[in-house]
Image 1 (cartoon, helix red, strand yellow):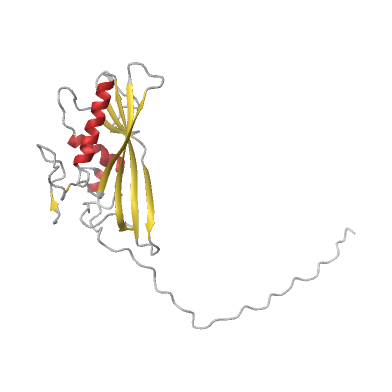
Image 2: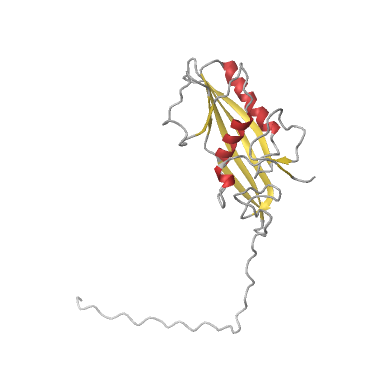
Length: 227
């Protein structure tokens, strides 16, 4: 199916569940600045910010990347709003075959959910993150697929405060070693995803093969004046 180019912000109205061929470039700096490497935590942050459907029962939370300049220090004002914090990612790359031409990419992104409202609010926020991932699972550049993997509630040592961590994966398969982006998933920052990886230079055979010389043995050790 042909790739349809759309604006850099998610369209208003219902999610694009019935149009899997649409590819969206989020307004994330690393996807718009020429030559920038994609920053997965910021891409996930902007996806959740753009696609969150706020209702009276579930208002839009504060959504930040851990240790980011958009957060006021390291404090969360949970009396004012719920918080979603995109945690430290792990990026795994696995070589595909033996030619050093293609690879598989898996990026694990933990998403921390914090609330002082109720355990019900915690699970409602988890469900909204899950809905967003399922809705845009094949639509977000520069990755081929987004998976929703796990949710782990954390309650040890907490009172009237609920916390859980959802993990999702950003994946791409059989992509060029250097760019890591498949054709059709290019962004303004990296528009040449289809360019093949440069191959190894042709090996030049030496015109003459010289035999190694016989090594010269070291001189006999002399006698010390101390003895």
